[in-house]
Image (tube, rainbow, N blue to C red; front, top):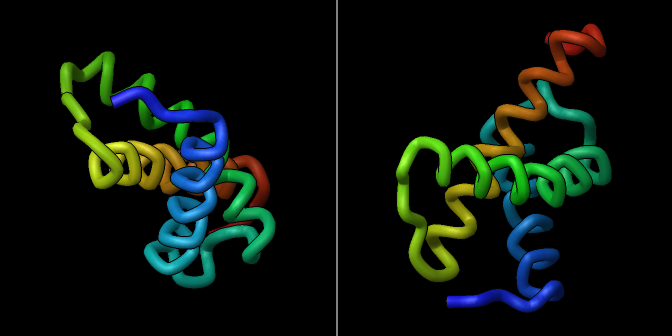
Length: 83
C-alpha cells in the first residue's frame, strides 16, 4: 500500500511518540523524539527491507518506524551522553 508524504509524516510522528514511551526518559523530549520518529521511519523501512521483514499496512509501517526511532535514540544517546 503506497503512502502519501503526509501518511509517512503521520506514521513518523506517532512512532516518535511511541519511542518516547518505550525509552522512558532516555529519549530527547517530545520534539526530539518526534523528529527522531520521522527519521526513524526511513531507517526502520530500510532496516526491515534489509532483514527481509515485510511490513504491511499502517501497523507494519508504524512498527518499522518505531523500531527505527528507538534505534536512533539509542545511537544518539551513545554519542550525546544520554543514558
